[in-house]
Amino acid sequence: MSNRVKLILLAVLVAIFAVVLYLNWGRAPQLLGIQASDARFTPLDVDSPALKGYLLQRIRDFKYSGRHDNIFVYRVPRQPAMPAIPVRDPNLPPDPPPGPPPLVLPYRFFGYVMNLPSGNRRGFFQSGEDIFIAAEGETLQNRFRVLRITNNSAEVEELASGRRATVQIEEAPPIA
Image (cartoon, rainbow, N blue to C red; front, side):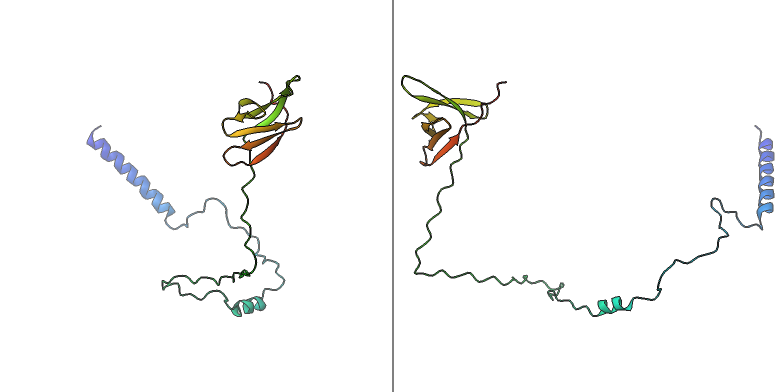
């Protein structure tokens, strides 16, 4: 395209722009979207539009009863008053020391077998997935001794402390 054609095209576009500006010069811009409605304003239905003075008075009469510390000065916080510790009568004998906690066995007792001629019993104990067989007087993992096996329970003693516990028989584990 030559420069002459470009200048003519530019002049035509400027003329069209001038005509559009001239035609729209005095008019107000039109709003797009929702237009204002002709409906009359109706106020909300309120029983009493007056201020509730009793609520304002209650706020004015409020007295703060908390701690009155200055938040801009650093000091160690005040400690609350400690309750008085009751004094023990020195004539009373001292309390006995608490006993050891009850023995909790990591085993489940789920059955036994008995040798009829000798009367010896062997118990079946389970710890996780491991199953142990121990006769009366034998030890389980060098920690517990089986003292006695009856029809519904087994009496076991911890070797380190001498504490005893009785384990009730439970249902046999499912066979996988």
